[in-house]
Length: 205
Image (cartoon, rainbow, N blue to C red; front, side, top):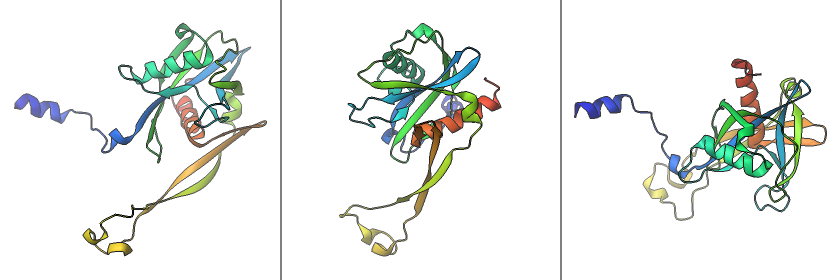
């Protein structure tokens, strides 16, 4: 009993409702070319069912039996046609919680000797954006509203106010970075903004 109490006192708190979130991991790849550091992005294949043609980082859904970092590395290897030995993971970024039941776990890392390879099944092309250019600009920000919409069979008679109950409303920021003809937006832009802050704070690059 004493041991159980000690274990409880040091437990890492979970998150209520975490089981409803789909877990994904991405790599935020840094590459160095002729003394310049770039962030590497992918344009997703137009043949994909989910988010075709959008700009993102390499990554994907967590599979059973693997860690989040292993997931980020595996997906990067598959999407960029590189070897795991080319990837050096420097550390985790901050987790992004989407209002749409997605939990994105970013990892910041470098890719060495990258030769512009990628899997055409998943990737249309790769995009290199100078890190200093992204650091020099603030993303454009737009605010989207979130409204609660109960189902038709919701038991209004069980709550104070019934159908007139004043449901809380929320918002979330939609960010945009622009580089030449490319648009980096949404979750990817949120992850970029967070990663840039971490890189500056920890003097990573």
